[in-house]
Image 1 (cartoon, rainbow, N blue to C red):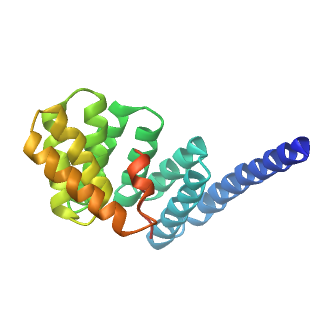
Image 2: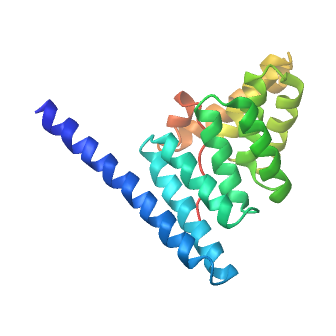
Length: 194
């Protein structure tokens, strides 16, 4: 039974790789016609990256987001999602650079701010992380991951009062919705979608 499952998974992943390559080639050919096609293919590669990320296939997700940026270099969603993948795979310096670009393009994106804060904490840049986490909470006051990040950052800079408030709000928001409870145990940020 195990070998059948392994064979199925390997076959499935091969199909995914081939479909990403086929999308890339089709997009490459069609994108030369006009800017509208480039934007459309960029969005398609972001969607493809989101699917790969959901299967925890981070290397293919990274390729998809990088390809989306080749078609549309100022795609804030592609930059934000690429930053999430870089964070998830432990590439914290690269993640902070990508999130800096994503924030410039879309300064109202709380995911970019809290992913930036998480990366900065991993790089032991706690004051910057704390400031980014506060901005994330300000942009989305109902996001439990933003509060989780603020709680962690506040502890790092010894802001006990802020940490206590953030923890209380994080647990309140997490317990109010069954689908959000996973944020309590997961440290990974979420992706943006079209």
